[in-house]
Structures are given as C-alpha cells and as structure tokens.
Amino acid sequence: MLLMIEINSEQPIYQQIRDQIVAGIAGGQLPPGSSLPSIRQLAADFSINLHTVNKAYDLLEREGFIQLKRKTGAIIQVKPSLAASWVERQRTLLAEAYAKNVSSEEILEQCKKILAEFAAQRTLHRNSFNGGEQ
Image 1 (cartoon, rainbow, N blue to C red):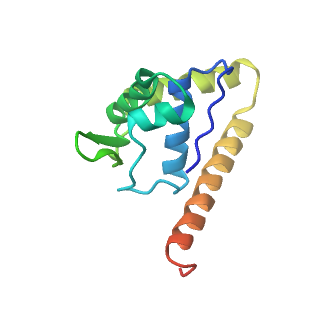
Image 2 (cartoon, one colour; image 1 turned 120 degrees about the vertical axis):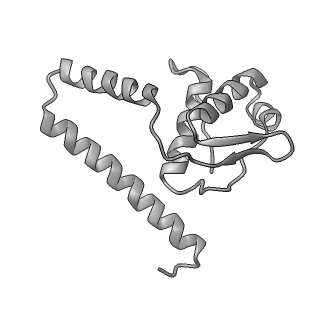
C-alpha cells in the first residue's frame, strides 16, 4: 500500500497516516497479519519526525487496528469493536452535513456508496491474492 502525505494539508500528518492505513484495511490492501513499516522507516521515508509516526501508530493501536510488538513491529490485527471516539467523529461529520442542509437520503446514499467502494476494493484485492480465483 502506498501512503501519500500532504505536508501543507490542514489535516495533521499523523491523522493522514492513520486515516490512510484504516482505508487500506477497509479496502483489503492491508489484510490481517500484514506488516507496516517501522516507525523509524516510515519517518525516514517521508522525512518527518518519528514522534509523528509514533502518534499515528499509537492511535491505531488504541483504536484496535494494529498490534505493536517490540520485535515484529506493527502488524494489522483488527479488533471487531467500535471505539466511542468513532461514534463521536461520526456524529460530528453527520452534524456538519445536517447543518449544511444535506438531506438524510443524500447522507445515507453517500454512506452506501463509500461502503460499496470498500467492498469492491476488498473483493479486488482478495481475488488478486488468490490468483484471480473466487
């Protein structure tokens, strides 16, 4: 999986790393058991502070997306539960849409579209790992 960092983005770099890894997990590019680059390696690759990468990995671990081990590094290991922080972020995003008079139907349609995209990506990656067989 290729990470893209926008240094001049309003979104903090650690959040960009976290969000892209979560999207990679959702889309199947990062299946359970996959290794992530070490904190030092990822920091060096992007020429960013290693504490920034550490913050992203720590957040991913607390949210139940990865497991950090001293000898093996960061491994994708998703715990099937939603953190309370996810519900709060979802609530904020829905509040933003609702405050801008986006209809409930449009919000739900966008959610369905995004979920369908993740399902399609996951199927594509699953088939590529299985040599194209289903």
